[in-house]
Length: 281
Ligand code: PEP
Ligand code: MN
Image (cartoon, rainbow, N blue to C red):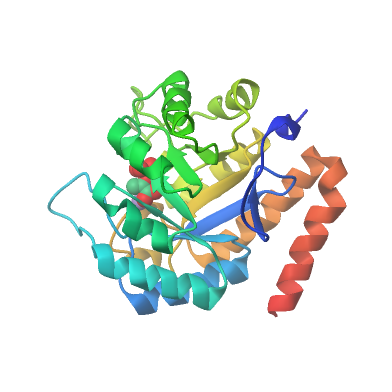
């Protein structure tokens, strides 16, 4: 049923392979707020089973009247938090001039939804020689997402992780409409791994776990979620941010679901997870 066998895995670190037999959870705050909260979050998401830490240093905020960003300083905090917790890190690049600085710190460079159509940024990020997390534009078709990936591939970088993060439709009850059809369709059209972002995809923390699992049921190689030790206090995207305990429950259920849908990897995945948690205890 699952066509993951045609996906080319991307090895971020030996413990974090995206598009291989195991699912990968990526978690962390929307924005990097300060070094202490980030380090606390990094340890908490790792204990919950995340394999990569996310956090925005440069934030493409929709409104200019909300929390903006800590920029270069936050990159240093991200490097420190990731290394303290033993997790690779992913962070967004919003300007070609940031690429060198971000590539020195991040294991994966993120192109955000609002920049998927920015060829100058795609070209500069491609040249950094690091894996790229390419998020679908909020009004982009699946074909346009694949074309954006091909801009990166044309520059000699084939290590691209696609991300379905919700699109804008006539429906306004949730922040965006998480287009889960994109997941199995991209598995048919491309060899690139695809993950889902149920945080931005819904905008509501009560919907995040269900849509994370729905994404995995659709065949996603992983999930990226916004998590914070105290979500109500998060300075950015608080309403869609979950606790580390909720993340742990998504990891547990996600591994079980993945194992049921992929019986061949059942024992290995669950065993690796139990072993990792036992080693952290
Ligand atoms: C993010 O992941 O931090 C983000 C801003 O997401 P998106 O680009 O999908 O809106
Ligand atoms: Mn966010």
